[in-house]
Structures are given as C-alpha cells and as structure tokens.
Image (cartoon, rainbow, N blue to C red):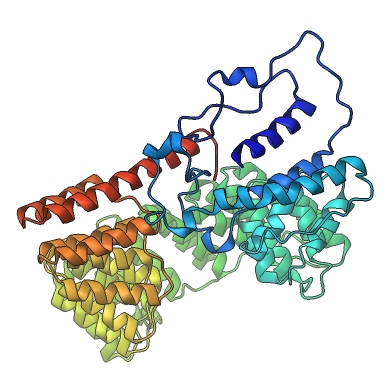
Length: 605
C-alpha cells in the first residue's frame, strides 16, 4: 500500500517537475525504496510531454485527505510516526502493536484507507475535471472562530471580494470579542486588519460604535501600522463618528510607545483634520502619555509652549507634577506648584500626594512627614492616595513599623484602604520575611471585600515558595481560592514544586487535581513535580505510573527526573520494573528526537 502511495506522489511530481524525483530519503523513513532511489525516475534527454495536466486544486484536496489531522489528537506532539507499522525493514525503529497508542497510528491508517478510495476519484477527475464535483470538507473543526478567520488570510487570496467571500464562508457567529481576538493575536498585516475590520462592522452582531473603532486602533497602534491607523481615523470623520479623549490617548500612546514622540506632537497639532480641537483635554491626553512613558522633559516643554494658548486646569498641572515626582525632581515640582497657585488653582490631595512621593524618592522622608502633618492646615484633608504615598515612602527606607502606624491612622479616621495599600504592605512584609504579618494583612484585605487579581496572588505566592515550608503559600492559595480568585498556572506550578520538595505528596495530588479542575492541562513540568514528590516519599510504583501516563500523552521525561526514579528503583531491587521503564523511555526519546528533527527541518506535523 505504501508503494501505491509513493506511485501516486511520483505521478503528481512527474507531471509538474519531471526532471527530479519527488521522494527524499529521510533517516526516519520506513518506505521500501530501491537501493538506488534516484533510479525511480531517470531524467531522459527528451522528457515525454504529459498527455494531460493535473489540476493543482485536485492535488491539494487529495493530500489534505491523506494527511488529515484528527480533532481529538490535535494536541498530541508526536505526529512524526512510521506510516507502515509492519514493515520488516524498519522493525528496529517501531514498537509492537500492543505498545503503540491508538492515537499514534492515524497517519498509516489514513494512508491505507484513502489510497484505494481516491484512485477512482483521481481517474474521474483526469478524464473530465469540469464535471467532477468538489466535496466540501470540514477540516478546521478543531480551530477557534478567530483562528478560522485569520486562516483566510494565510491563503494569499487576491481581491477584496474574494477575501470577504472566504470570510463569510467560515460561518463564524461574529461578535465584538471575536473581532478583538482576531486583530490582537496572530500576525496579520495592517492592510489585512483594516480589510477584516471593514467586513466585520457590516455583520449583524457587531455594533459599529466608538468602542469598536478603539479596538482596531489599539491593534494597529500596537504593531506600528500608523498609516492604517490614520486611515481609520479619517474614515471615522467621514462617517460622522466623533473621536473623544480616549481615542486621542490611544493614538498618542501608540506613537510614544514606539518612541516617535515627534509624531505624537504632530498628531496633536493636526487634530483639526480629524474633527477635534486642540483644547485642554487633548493637551492633557498628550501630557499624560508622555509622562507615563518617562518623557517628562518633552512634556514640560510642550506645557511651557502651550501656556497662554490653552487654558490649563488643575489636572494639567497634576500631570506634569506627577511626571516630575517619579523622577524625584523636587525643584521642578515646587516650581510648577507655584505656577499653579499663581494661575488661581488650588492644589488638591492628588497634587500633595505627588509632592510627598517626590520627596520620598529624593530621600527627604522627614520633609514629607512635615508636609503631611500640615495638610489639614492648608485645607486639604488626607485621603487614601495621600496615605499610600506616605506608606510607600517608609517602605522605600525599610521602616515597616511606620507603615503600620499610618495604616492604623487610616482606619482610625475611617479612610478605607484600597488595593494599592494592601499590595504594597503585603509585598513588603513578604520581602523581609514577616510572613505572619503578611498573612494577617491578606486576611484583612479579603475581609474588606477587596479581591486581588490573578497576577497579584501569583506575586504573593512566588516569593513564599522560595524560602521556608510551603504553609504560608498554601494559606494564600486556599484563602484566595475560597473567595473566588482565579489562580494562574504559574502559581500552581510553584506550589507543586515547593510541596514536592518537602514531600507533601497528598497535598501535591490535591493541588494537581484542583489545577485540572480549573481548566489547566498538565505539561511535563507538572508531571516532573508530581514524580519528584512521589519519589521523595518512596511511592515508586505510583511514580512509574505517573511517568507512563506522561509518556502516553506525548511528553518525554527529562534525564534528571528519570535518573532519579531509575536509581531509586534499582536501590529497591526492582530491576525488572526499571528495565521495562527504560525500554519505554528509550522509545519515547526516539520519537521525541524525530519530532525535534522534523521541526528543525520545517516539517510541522
């Protein structure tokens, strides 16, 4: 059957590239070829003219069926398997039929099943290609809607009408979320993203509003497609969609993030072309983007240049003062503060919080304390942001007792702490290994209904898994999971690593089960942590079972973890068990090496 498949490929190859052979010898090939494979097709002096021409579309359809990927096995890694299992010449490279998992045999079965059935279709197509029906094949059932839509642009179709027709043929129930996933992921070009967006906004479930335009503007700006971004802005103006301050911030931040500050300033000067005036709100958007990206000097120059042309408000001064506070430039802060008062604008709590932060970054914590104590005299009642600035100042010098005093002062004055307050204090407690205080603060945060994000929980667990027993990390994990916080895969791996190192096998298996219940799949790193934990407590049989399960799913164990398990089996006089495991690992590593070889040569099975 393999020879018939080779004959089919050689026939196709001879009709298009007749001087050469279409079969290349691979170190992992099991096809029974002649000893001199170049004699399969010897080039003649005058190659005969083929009697018919095979349509390329037919060839692609036939090969797509022959090399079909099953949806149930699309996640497996080992697709470079021998298509002919019972070939005698390659028995040293193959497992027995009983040892080969069923999901590794689909290529050979597919070839044997399809060659006979497709021969008649091929002859029918050659005899009368115009009347041969093209059968529609659902080959992308394992793809997400966004991947189906992005796949249309991989076909290199020509013409807007053809691309839009192919997009409609995907039969995707398009929503705004799917549009965002298509343009934010993958590697679509600027023209392709705009073309897709123009087609998407005509779909019934996609609302053509300002938020939808913000989605495409962010995606284009993130990939530096600035010409296409301006094209979308002109389209918004022509269609009567007015841009707001958020739109201006998105465009300007795209320029500043790409270190094209001059382009951002030019865009601010050209706002009239897009139907927006150069008012105070637009200026604030530009200054904020510049200060957030540490271009404070440029922001201050624009601020001075626009003075007298645009009426400044309190937020304008706060943005510039906040930019200087990040750099600890107290002199510039005080100069802008005097200008603010001279313009008849009174500083608010945000202004003083920037002043306190700047004093702390300059190492003048005592001056910051003096300013904080005189806030009420100046008519400014301290709020959460002001207290957070003082707490951050004392954290920077390592005085956590003063941080606790200011925190208790907040509670006495009925000022509610926010997420920033608890994150800074808990992180500082963990850093100096005051774990009990960190756990107490974490419980108090959850008691006030402030739920940390996934990244925040991971930032707490990661340092706790670097020293001491895993008790504190498990307390953070359990309490966060109890209130409904989502735990990241990185946090699960950290817990498994720490628990396995301390031999907490029961807790390892429980966390592993909860990880799978949360929707995360196990990779080789997770399996190694579980195997290591089982080895540490002497449960060698269970460790072997876990390793065999990992190999069955296509993962190859590392040399370190396999050597540890193998040595423990030999020390326990389980030589036969160790030898059987050795044979299985040997075969898996052979297929792993074959898979790496194929990927290195561009054969993406």
